[in-house]
Image (cartoon, rainbow over all chains, first blue to last red; front, side, top):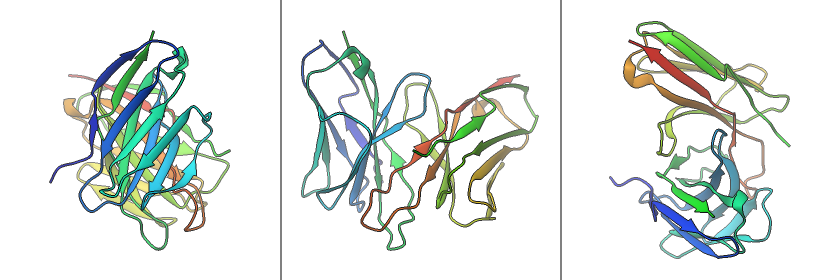
Length: 115
Length: 115
């Protein structure tokens, strides 16, 4: 079975530009979450989407936005890029259990470099 | 907000030695997950823990969910070269079913093995 896939693998952008990152979850998973991982740190939660609706948002500015499509794939958009946005962006998919407990499976990430 | 303190930050051991790392927090968590991340890749799920006091094994890996729900540990027995990497603990804070099911990550433990 295919795992979580992300594209592109690497991306180089200039300050002020906009970027769109894409994610396809594991087949059968309806929830997609996005995380930002700065070098040397653990991933930080950005968004969770379930059934095409935003479930939650981390402590990130409004320059960050996302959406989920009917096939459960997702896009993360970042506007007005700053140097500090340089990071590995990870997508994770999961099933949702009624009791709220779940396991998240991560994709390989997109390495974004802002110059 | 919730924070996880993971220790040690790094470990340098001989092949065949046992490894122990842990995560602590001042907040309670509903789920504890342990991931391994290799350079340039996304985190790979190793073990998931769902109940306070739960002890779970996966091959040479053993992890426990602390009774207070504020801590967890991971042990690796008889380490081998492929165990090299960064290990992250992650906790899911309590939230309603309609709330975001985010993960809070520790800072990671970098494991280096001398052959």
